[in-house]
Length: 65
Image (cartoon, rainbow, N blue to C red):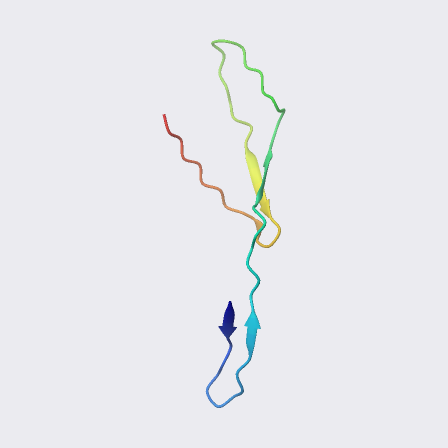
């Protein structure tokens, strides 16, 4: 993909932007697997995601039942 960085009256330069082909990596916080006793409360310890190009990544969780 070429992106133009032209300004009026100046020379135009084009640079190629390589496609991002590596997926972000999701890291779980806490033990894996998690053991929970029957009828006891569970608190999700959480997670974070890192991308090789975009550093920390915002993650949106959608639950389907």
